[in-house]
Amino acid sequence: MNIILKIILLSSAVVTKTHANEEETNNNNLNLLRGGGGGEERALSDDCVSRSTYLGCFNDRNQNRAMSTEIEGRGYTARECESACAERGFLYFGRQWRGQCFCSNSDYSYKKHGTASNCDCCGTNVGSNKMCVYELQTAEATYAAAPGCTDRFNGTPYLGCYEDRNRKRALPHEVHGKFHSAELCQMECKEAGYRYFARQWRGQCFCGDYDYNKYGPASNCDCCGRNVGANKMCVWDNGGGVGSGETAGTPPTEPVTTATTTDAPVTTTDAPEKTTDATQATETVSTTAGYDSSNKNIVDIAVEAGIFNTLVAAVEAADLVDALTAEGPLTVLAPNDEAFDKLPEGTVDQLLLSENVEILKEILLLHVIEGKVDSSMVSSGPVTTLSGNLIQADVSDSGISFNDANVIAADILASNGVVHAIDQVLLPPDVSL
Image 1 (cartoon, helix red, strand yellow):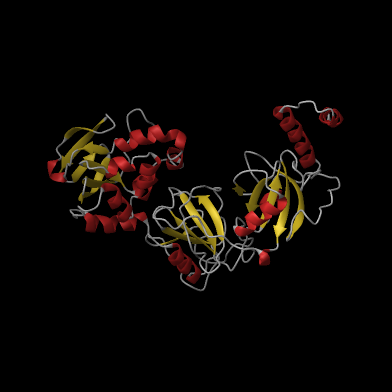
Image 2: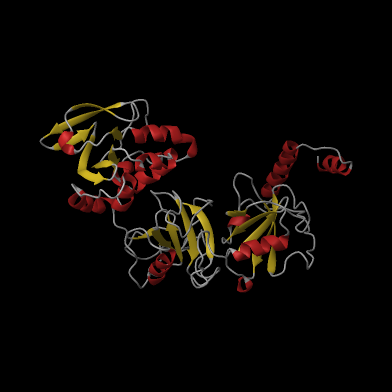
């Protein structure tokens, strides 16, 4: 097959992309079965890169990239890819296929699909599903500011924009509160002894020593703005430059001998402690019931309360922010974070995907009632929601409930209505999770 393919290529016949990919897959599978590709690599000219060490030719996959961050576009020369990854603070870079450029800080991820052969590292076509990988000499690297930021925070390298999850954070240690500036987040994590720091969503601050890229890269982060992006975070290396301390994505090789259940190595300073949703809910119920925040809209109240993080992320994903900040008035039955935690594992992450936006919107609108309905106006019986479905209100000596959800904090007044916090997520009759 290889001989036939070469003859076809030399005669300039057209070979479809599908056949080329099948051929490449067969070759890659053979290489993996043999324990890696053989063959001599072409000698690199001095003009190919300026300050990096060539590590080899490796296989790659379109649907499962070996290196975590892609520089948008194609047609990059090796030097251009080298500069792009160095400016972003990465330790490794790979040039792939038609000059696509990938960057990573992991010293093992680029090997995940095995070695390849016959890469044309400096040519116009490296090779289908192949990439040439280099290690940057980081002493010469320069670091660019993060998107939306004018400062580089004393030379701290920006590592990129990454996906995150509410239920299992990539960086496990949260600094209490939100609306942290990037500089404040940097100081908090550095004082606590962590290598990486990340600013997420509404200025939440997270720290850790590895695994920040566990959910893969994201795009369009506003790193120093008011809203970084739903389920996104901007990550910086606080460890004095790439290559120091733990490598990203590499857990400690030895179990940590400590009584704590956190993933991070023991530090000599007190780590930021994450306040649980249960604690925050107790504090919120005792302080916000009947609280007049009439100069703030419903979304602002949900953001600042600190116990509706998942709800706000869902509202943003469903594109309902404008609807809930409009003049109204509206009544919102707001499930707290613990309510979302009661859903089956993985449900929230699935609902936040773009393909499930209509289902998510139907669920959220089941929690919205037209008009301003404070607790004194609620009576037992059916209630029409903006989803078009009915929910059942029940008023008793023990309190107010809607379907199976109990009101745990009532009458949080807003400029465009009122919020009642509830302890369960309401589901439409045609939705089963």
